[in-house]
Image (cartoon, rainbow, N blue to C red; front, side):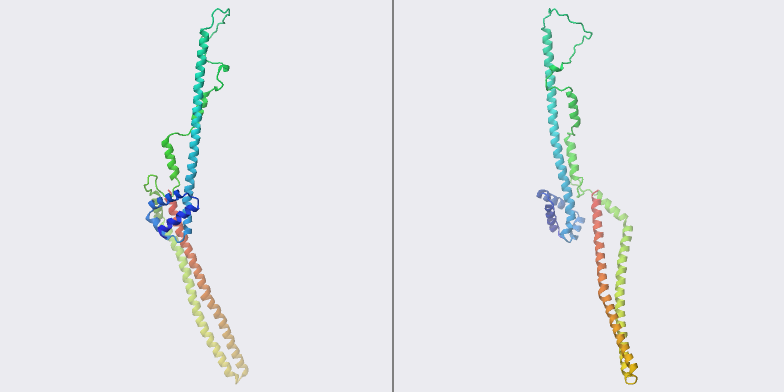
Length: 327
């Protein structure tokens, strides 16, 4: 398949799976930019548009995961904004509480300094000469809370990381963690998977060549046996028909000549010749159908099986290559 047709069909597959047009175009442009000679060979080997479904499914899975990650980041950002707003409200409440406490303490000090001294009331002595800063609960503002600093600490502890650099790095990791392009975010090619694939292939060549040779030898042996069987059946058919016709004619002619001398022997010989002709005809029909129809049909099916094995081997090669390139 040509590259232009491949990209057109792949774009249509993206749209069919629900991918947005701008992301589909961006995906196609990125594939064109990062395509390798090996990928071009694989594109040329594609015979029908149905074979592109697997490729389109892989890229759509990546697109869907990126979209889910994007939605999750938006949700986390909204939660962060809400927590920041709650934190601001708590800080404002704490500031109001401190202001109210300061006002109440100043008012109490003013009333104490301006209170009449000769009231006739005896003040009981106290053992603690330190002034207490504790304010009665009934004098506090209704908006006050018993431990605002503890609530504030809990809010700060539950907040996510607000570092923009960390958020940007996490976003890049989410965008490229499941990318099938095998490339880094900065655009440079990552050949780790490619090196792993080719090194593994070279190291396992003795095993793979042995297995492929064994399977290929089995198919070659089957083809050779079927061909030899066809040739043998045809030769047997020719010999059988020739010998049977000869025996049948000899018996019929001999019987005719004996009919004038000994009619019983002549009739027996003629009947024997006719019986030989019938047996030869019946066996020739069976051998002919076996050699000309059944064996070629079997050979054709073996050839189809051989083609399926070759195709599956190719698909296995491409799948192993893709999995290694994900590393």
